[in-house]
Length: 225
Image (tube, rainbow, N blue to C red):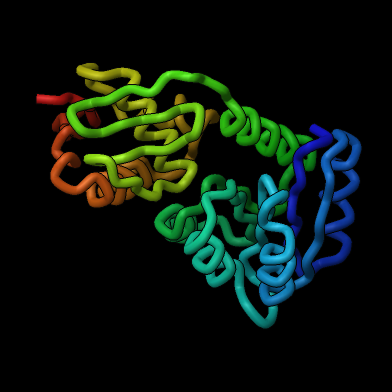
């Protein structure tokens, strides 16, 4: 993991040190920021090498939501939100803004490291296949999606959800199955987070968003007809 650089953003120095110590034990390179404004500054200076951001929500000067919004305007770097609040609406809000993962404090540092490794493993997958689905071109090596030749911007979670639907073309997938396979762990929140992500993906696909079918009482299916 020596080539991976993680930006740790938290206003509590003890929390940053705890996370840093566990990630350094796995040979990650670490950058730090103690507030939202500093986080954006560090990101701007190092965005070509940062491979993941651990971002606290409640911070002085600029909160995590504001940092998330601004980073998402220019980058699809994976972002894990850290928060002392465990409310479902907060999680849904984070996913709406483009967060890829959500971990409530207090958490096990070992679990946090496992989540970081899982996300980076998924984003570094290599495949040379470029497939076209009636005008939707997917390059999984470059992790890009084009609609009628025009690139569209998908967050990490939106991309993974869309790829999962496409790879199971013509198969009706339940929300529980999608959560277990795309989120990659047992998600104890409301499955409405899937509906929120699907809505955003459909919007970005434009007219081709109709290829994602809603299966009433079940979930969703990708079908080109």
